[in-house]
Length: 446
Image 1: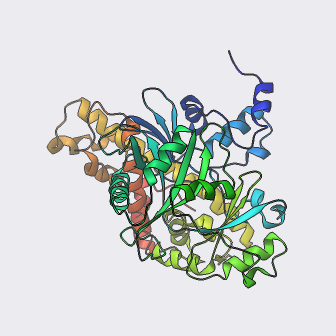
Image 2 (image 1 turned 90 degrees about the vertical axis):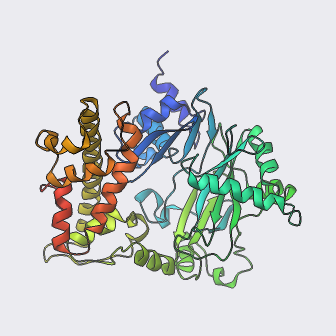
């Protein structure tokens, strides 16, 4: 029976969507650039490879209750994992949340420090979550997966868990803890930091810390006091909580604007997560030191002087963190806000084109494979490919991996990430940008 507008009005009364299904997730990401549905082992994973400024419209600003509900679901599609056979939801990761001041909905003056809230250390690591699945790498029926679920990082984590639990001196029981709570309908969510897996901040030792626990069906988060009680029972390490009442740096904090300024000045951490206990809503605040370090690491420019800088900024995946701190070099008749609007529009255009070209590359290889064209004769198909010369040359990198019976969806993540890397490498100077542009077409310009 088709759901009515009233049904969606009722569904929207909850902060997070309840009872997520595979079909709902497919509908939520349909036509959304960068979002992927992939099969990994016996699981279905909903995630994204790249996002633009228009990937996550504010559900509260959407007047149509059905569209609003599916925009909420899209914010859940960042590592959602379903069982392929039963389509049961196995893992519910953190919902997508944003930096303070990143969008209008999370401007500092709109985020009131009312009710009960906590401030957590934001760890610069990898989001990890256990799931109940019986496969080769699981222990006690538990597999520790990354954002993509079953992956090389997941396999490494499972080995790490075995090592930790074999050390009787620490009494940490990750698997027992996870089994109990998963069977009770909750997703334990962890952050893994390691000197072997450095991102920006360097950590001296491997640590897997509990950061949240989420009801798989309702999406509700456990309060900190309940989370700590659950963790202590099994000696599970937890993320650090910042005691704002005892730390003198936070004495002046009366409102969110004050909090942002204090956190920006902190050293040697990525930043903080502000979590409201009554609702589960969260906001990120990054330190200025971390933003500077990450800009250097990702080769993301601070001064936007020309087109290559815009491409570099967007392709680094770093724009959301730094948009408020970038110095824009504008023309005589252009205001900085106007340039920001142009970048927002161009970010969608750029990633839409990357997805379009990536799909066309895969489809052309599939066509060649189905026509039994060997690699040594593949060059004869360039004229009929519809691809630019540069894009066609890139297809050789995937010719062996893509098989005739494969779907486009199976390879879109691999190909689009490769295209993004190639484009990013072309932003070191203006001449190279012109070469990179030829992959997507001469008409795509900022």
